[in-house]
Image 1 (cartoon, rainbow, N blue to C red):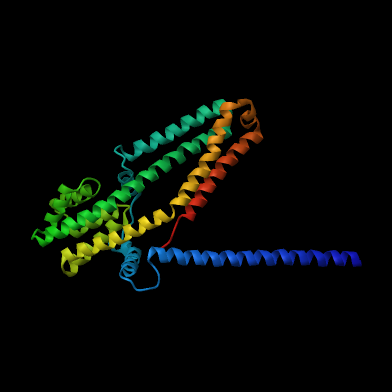
Image 2 (cartoon, one colour; image 1 turned 180 degrees about the horizontal axis):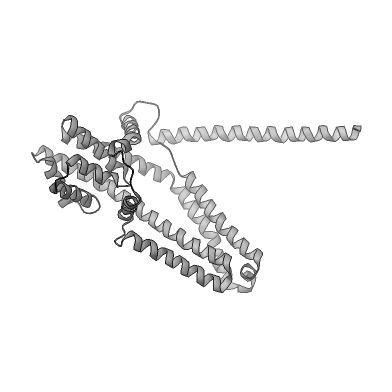
Length: 324
């Protein structure tokens, strides 16, 4: 090895070491800033290490939520039961098979039309786009259903506690909830009352209804009632305790939504900008955008654009997840 080659190797190693050191320093600084932000977020959410009443309530909620599945039923849900629970949570009035076949048929129709106009790649994109739009819309409906269910469940537990203190039996309080509360909570308690009238045991009926629900609060309520019925105790106080835990969790969820609102707005803006610009350019200058539809490279670029938008949406959704 000549001296010049040795000098080149030393310079290369030195440059690499310098770049690697700078990279490590940046990683350490970013990690320290990340830990500081997490401590600030936990302090704002009220879940620091101090033994406050609210943090203790949330700790008990998290511990119970991990074990709530085992208290419902040892049997796993069948695919039919899962689809039925999904249908109720999404608010579909049509049968599951009808909805699925309708969406798949619409996606296939879009694929055929796009294939006849622009080719296979655009057809696959249209097919995937129909499914993604349907899934996003259904997910929004499920989130809306869950938020409404939680608010109604708190009111329902308050009605049950007052009814029990007034001397009504447990089934009488459930019947009162079914009459006073609208769907979806009223429908759930109405099913419990109907199954009880048909001779099914109350604990089994509550567990059956909760097992097929997407809502963790209902499962927690079902486990608490089942244990209380078996061991005995004051059911009115149990209803108040469960309602207090759910209220604390709702307050925490509202804080999280407020703190992540800016990220959600940024996500929608960054995703909408390229889509709006794409349609605007197609409108004002179709010839400029024509290579995207007529060449293989252009079609691959369109698929890459869609994949990039989906990946960016997924990453920004993960950025808004706060684990507590």
